[in-house]
Image 1 (cartoon, rainbow, N blue to C red):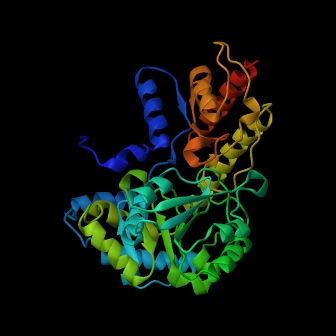
Image 2 (cartoon, rainbow, N blue to C red):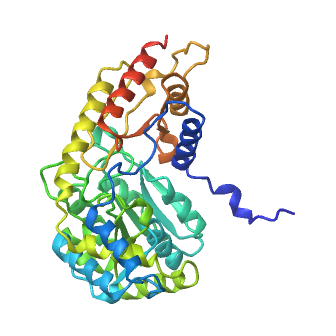
Image 3 (tube, rainbow, N blue to C red):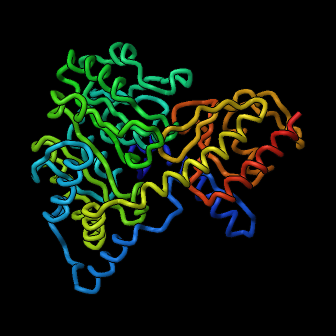
Length: 400
């Protein structure tokens, strides 16, 4: 009899972490690997957060706090939601956890019963379906298409909803595609959801500040006020403040859901890192002046990457409008032969070939629910993006 739980065999390891760890092992072995697999800004943590963390240590702010966040941090989050999203949340409507991933997991664990369905547009972040399954729910995928810029189609959403649907999970700007949901797109989705009052919305806005379109960022509770009570608005410090290792995520939602999430957290991790909470508090209260500079750097890197991909026969790519990923279709490379005689037959084969022939690590699209694509993170130094694209161009040119 196996010691492990029966459902463990069905829960995959994160492929992004697998590829990232492999790239790190190769670097440790002395190979010059350019890793485009990690969803992590290469900038240092914003200085105001770093200094606040140091000050918290110096002044002894290192003890337990309230289980789901200090009142001071919740007040800063409250101010952020009002300032950036025109959303009003009382403190008992705010949850703070050890990263956005825990916020989402807590919400699913607090609400899903066996047989409940969670609609997830694909491409999706790798952990969404796994977390749904771990919490006893059933992931239900809607495939979004590149020719529609990976937007969730309202008619497809209507067809996917059943009496068992508990959540619809949105993510904009999107990981892995870099697609951004417009206000019109969100309004069309909201119109569908109004016809199904039993369905709730979980929106992951973690890449909110990394937006390259001229239109301002919008989230669904902001454009569809009548869905406010049915929406959990999730965000965090990782992407917009380069605080990935600090592990602070947060959300605003209905009080009974927030209380249930707090109960789960009290029995698992307890409070998020106290030092990180003080750092996040100061960062959220500050004027994020760094964002404009970051955007320009990411746009430059994006353009280098997209322009190079556009010149490679067999690859098609949409221009990302947010986050820091490109999600090219590589099916045009299928059937081609590498120098070792192997035949490219999948996106996983492309990723393997690029790692071997170009020493560039990317993540195959199967991890995101989209076979035929690869995810390429351009959150690395600009010259390394250019070098990676030179290597990939050369490697693709060697296929016959």
